[in-house]
Image (cartoon, rainbow, N blue to C red):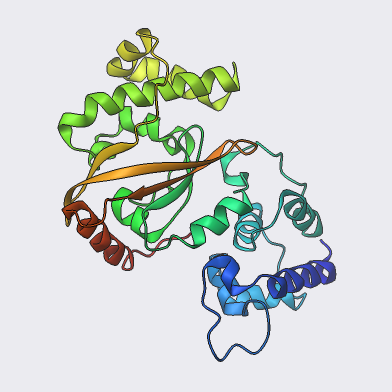
Amino acid sequence: MDRSQLADFLRRRREALQPEDVGLGRGPRRRANGLRREEVAALCVMSVDYWSRLEQARGPQPSVQMLTAIARGLRLTHSERDHLFLLAGHNAPARHADLHARHVAPGLMRVLDRLQDTPAQIMTDLGETLVQTPPARALFGDETRFAGMARSVTHRWFTDPDARRVYPTEDHDLHSRAFTADLRAASVRQGAGSRAAAVAADLLTTSEEFARLWSAHEVPGVHQYEKRVQHPDTGVMTVQCQLLADLDQNQALLVLTATPGTDSYDRLQLLGVLGQDVTAPR
């Protein structure tokens, strides 16, 4: 671990990152460019004291999980992330290795930063949620907390009844078919021995519903632009689903909106207020 170089790198990346880059207002009292230490610490989900000690070259060696949070918080590119890991005395993670080391595309993060009042989240092609806005956590719950195969929304859909609560019961069959078809497509893209193939193999032995749908060999159709979601405090909402894909990363930004002037629009706005009370790591 090269503490002095790590400290210099973190300080310079913090100073180069502008408030507008992360969806913050500059404000009249900001004298210097770049972010304050407390702002970066919040983005990286750590204490200000911990960040300060890293910048002052007197902190402990960060763990792989902490470095992943720092890379995401600072909106680092792949090359910058690899440099960060090496400075901290760790091997640079493989580009598509374990999910906890998956690097969110900086471009998608910048878009997400501007959607903090909207249900939006970045997901892998296997339906593994990497980061959510507060309204998304208010609607779906904190989907970043899961481990193992449960990180896949498809695996949870067929093994955890609570995963279905966000959709009206009469729509469950449609979602079951869509999740199955999407998993089949992901397993074909990723190939034998992949995470997608492992999830499919596990579901074939644990879910009769999935096995029945899998045997139908359906492939994904046109993306379901409009769907219904529900929340205990807002009721059922008709929303439009937009996907912004990063094909190099196999990631996509999912954004839910509603038509202005409708009840669903007003209820979605309320969900944004509810999201302000949701506290979870980004």
